[in-house]
Length: 173
Ligand code: IMP
Ligand code: MG
Image 1 (cartoon, rainbow, N blue to C red):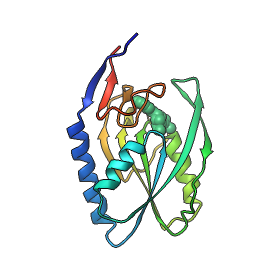
Image 2 (image 1 turned 90 degrees about the vertical axis):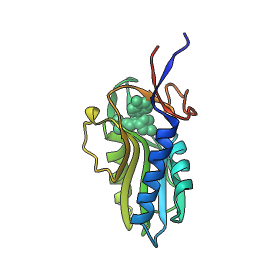
Image 3 (image 1 turned 120 degrees about the vertical axis):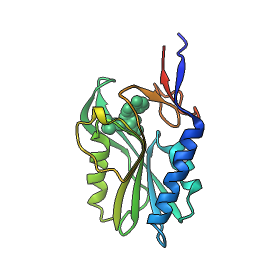
């Protein structure tokens, strides 16, 4: 069956909000280099757009994690599939995520990277679904707060599809 995708946040709204976020980071990190860590694969589209709009020097690295569960519910166990290529020690690190849901993935990553002695460590997420939070996560910046619905596009997938949609959509069946 072909799924219908409804627009939750338009391409124009997403792009405008990312430009605002980029300007805010530029102001806060003046004179520094931001070391962005993207969580594969969902954060890639957001990370590219955000870093392209920033004037602050940026270096990039990537991590891949998966959390086990029955498909719709995660068990809380997070597995590291791909670690960073470079050290974070002494760097001004920003973890870039697509969506904050239960908080399990990000709380695991904050603990892991925090132990590696970065100069600073902050978290930015494009989307936040606060209704589903199990573990509290301290966010530096959020693009949009979304309702408790399964969202796709702008990096977010449903069974690996729809990541390349230029807007945030919801599957309407
Ligand atoms: P958390 O550990 O529960 O916070 O999980 C966050 C991860 O779950 C995100 O990085 C996404 O990969 C995935 N996720 C959570 N909600 C959605 C959604 O609505 N659409 C697509 N992926 C989602
Ligand atoms: Mg993800």
